[in-house]
Structures are given as structure tokens and as C-alpha cells.
Length: 364
Image (cartoon, rainbow, N blue to C red; front, top):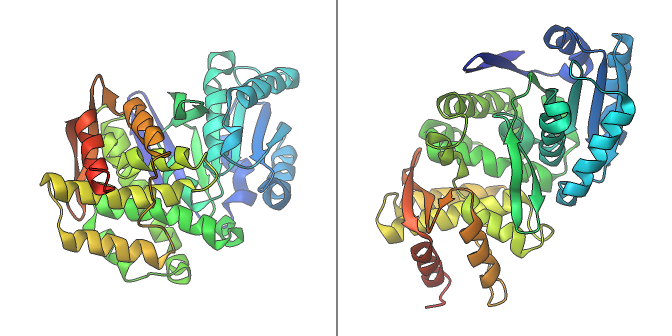
């Protein structure tokens, strides 16, 4: 088992990475939740039939009283209606401020359950047990929790750090190739923005089987890179914004497809290519070779490197850019490559970003 510690002002928590951790969850939860009597577990309709039975009996044998809410799988569950339903279920269960919420699943489950934990009773402890590659390398670490609004993704949320993150790579064995590739977009992102040697490591292993042979190293490296950024900038006002490489346009792609056509990873993959192209067009850094290397690696995992933007899609693109959380007033901090392994935030007028995107898509 590998262990990382995220150290923040006045508190810290561990990220534990190791095969079999799911079945050992109770002993770790007892250690970090010494006062908890009740655990409210949130999972989804994909994860529950496979992994809930591996978690709940151990928790109950350890003396925890448990309740479970299974939500429908998919981005649609990250809604105000589902958040409200969780609050009511937690109150029906008799959750108190010394108890905790456990997220068992992917990013949707973690975001929703975490936001519920951050807000019920003005905040209760929260445990992350991510079961997808994307949630293991990205959303389970760093304390961002949120729901979606009609105007866009993750627009209502909070910063609520978990008490511990239990990461069992065995859960990745049951992912289909599409969902595994979804996570690889975020894995590749870390190499692009923070660690060229890691990007090169991935480029030499352009298949799921090769990545899985080194999965604990991959998970550890991604989480360690994110840990360093989060410790420096927990509230996402400075260096942490680098983690949004590919996400500004990626969120627009997701919304253009009503969160059904493109997965988060697919949208981010194409968004990273757009960001690399914008960097070249603006002269802010990166090279054509960097773009080609990124494109080749994304394509190795069947991730899209281009998503079309039709006339009917363009208003959605413009609105999403305008509402992006990295924006302030009429400007936005766009994350662009300086070189492979290094990125920077470039402050641009939103109108300039849209003008560059118009040129990229042949609209002007």
C-alpha cells in the first residue's frame, strides 16, 4: 500500500492506494472517525451491484450503523433535487454532526455526496472511496464538491476536504474501456501541465494493459502532483487553476452534448487539444511537436482530439465561456502550455478567447 498525506492549514488527510483496500475500509474509517456511530453511504446504480456488498458488511461488523442511498448513474444526478433528497434521507437516518458521509463511486457520486456532507448540519465528515480511474486521479482529491445547474457544470459547490481517501485499484478491473479511457484524459493532463517525464512514461505505455501493469505508480504520481498543487492553493485562486487545462472548452463540449454525447474525459481530451492550438495561435508557448505528441497519446486511448462546433452549438460555447469559474468580469484565465510538462494561466478577454475559437473553427 502507498500513502500520501495532504497537509493543509490546521488539518491533513491521507490518500491510501492499494489492492484490497475496499474490503479493509472499516479499520481505516475507525481510525479517522473515532466518534462516528452512523455512516451514510452514497453510491450509484452501476457501482452498488458490484461493490456495495464488499463494503457494508465490514462496516457493520466494525460496529457502524449504515444507511445507503443508491442514485441513478450519470451526470443528471448532480442536481439540486437529488441533493435535497439526500439531505432528507440523512435526517431520516438520524445523522448527527459526529457521524459521516461515505462516497462509493465515481466523480458524480463523490461531488454530490461531498456537497451534501459539506452542507448537512453545516458540515459533517466525509470519506472518499473512488471506484473509477477519473475519480481516483482527480475528483476524489482536493476537496472540490459540487452540483450542476442549468447554466452549467459544477456551478454550485463548496471546498470540503475528505477525512481519508481509500483508493483500491482492483475496482478498475470492472470498468469498460470507454470509462477507463475517460480517466486517462485526466492522467495525461497531469503529464502535460506538471511533469514531462510522466508524460513520456505514459507515451511508452499507450494501452490499458500497459497502464494497469503500473497502475499504483500511475495513481500515486497523479495524486502526488495534485497534492502539491492543492497544498499550495486550496481555494483555486492561483496555481491550482492549472489543473483546469482543457476544461474551459471541455465543459462547453459537455454542455453542447447535454452531458450525454461526450463524457467528461472525452470533452477534456478535445479541450486540451484546443488549448494547445490556442497557445500556438497566441504565441504563448508550446510547439507543434507538443500538440502532435498529445494528439497521438489521446488517440491511443480512443479519446477524441476534435469535437465539432456547429452554428447551433456556438451559442452554448459562448455562454459557457462567459460563465466559466476561472473568469472575472470580462476576462478569463485560460490554461495554456508553455512546453510539454509546464503550463500557465493566461488572462484574456472573453471576447478574445471567443474570437480565437471562431478562427479555429473556421467561423471567421
